[in-house]
Length: 250
Ligand code: NAD
Image (cartoon, rainbow, N blue to C red):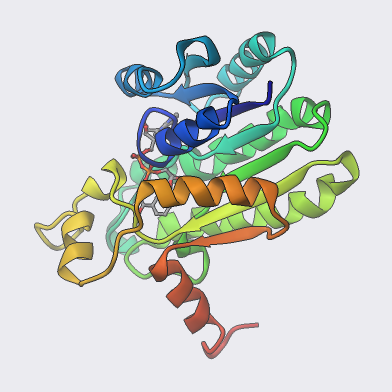
């Protein structure tokens, strides 16, 4: 039985991707810092093929423990690591508190890098394995107002491309998802300088949300396809199109 470990599996995109792979008969490991979210996600999946692993992706020791724990359940297989846990951090970069800056860098990039580095032996030992990282449309070009977030997602994009080339020799494919706006808990963050949440700002701007089920279908396609980056939704496609015509690009 194929096996996927999903970080951020207690909510949003991670939960939907877990459901998608479970529907295909895969074993699913849900990893998240949030115990309540983990229990809610697990309740949606077949009990005999799901396990929950409470962890903080910023902690390398917890990664080692969870990867070993999941491998013990999956017969050593790790067909996909979905490196997806992340947080938003908005507002002017000149005002961002340093602890908030550290937090977004640590969760969105250090967590992804630890996941990639520490899962490597398991992915290498599983024929046809894939590392799928959640980047963002904010990794297409620098998003003003989301500078720190955007920078962490550029780092995820860079790591994805570098590892896809580097790990081809190990038979591991490395992919990223670049979602536009998905209506999840992530968008509940307040926008700086306004009393609106990010979700309200998206709705107010007339921008479209992509259903989380579509993201899950695209995650399935990304894992099985040749494209390194998968754009998700109209916002991501529009940004990618605009980026081709932006002055000052290399
Ligand atoms: P979400 O808030 O619903 O889910 C994020 C999950 O990550 C939560 O369950 C949370 O508990 C978990 N998490 C946070 N910090 C953690 C930590 N230190 N260790 C372990 N788990 C932790 O949001 P989502 O929209 O499903 O986000 C998933 C990914 O998608 C993120 O990387 C996000 O940046 C990316 N993304 C989201 C959107 C969007 O519009 N929602 C757009 C582009 C990219």
